[in-house]
Image (cartoon, rainbow, N blue to C red):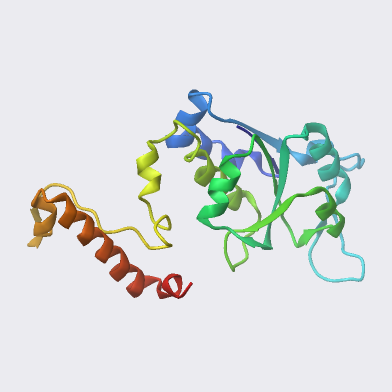
Length: 222
């Protein structure tokens, strides 16, 4: 997979993409990630990429030209162009799996007060990672890349993500434990030490339901 990210702050991505699973995926050749500063594509003599909104209002709005030119320079027939915006489709685990099947993703990070509405004419999908406002799309872009890259074949064991939260009818993941067996008078549930795989599976399923009821009852309603 190839991922191109359009941003005004490329340095924000350096450490994030050079650590942990994303670093390993890059070293394995599973993903190529390139960061583009779309300010490099502006034709404005003062290197501007934003301007005041028509009709008045506060803040600055990202201009069409730098983003259009940057996208057009890297887009192919296999590209899927994503715009990160609070008004986008809520990002879910199903989106992760769908996007992990793509060959080329182009992710546009918004900033300032917003972006020229005409930019929507060159995108394929709008995504929001939650009902709140961030300074820009850089952190959401990191979220997308992390959630997608880990699903690429061979990056992690299939079983690792198959058994995760939101995989089993939208249930949260069951509690897990490791050594020591007792810590500060808190004991590992006896069933996990029994060796009875059927009972362990039943316990974990019940715990997933219990945990979901307590923390995210809205998932059960869905």
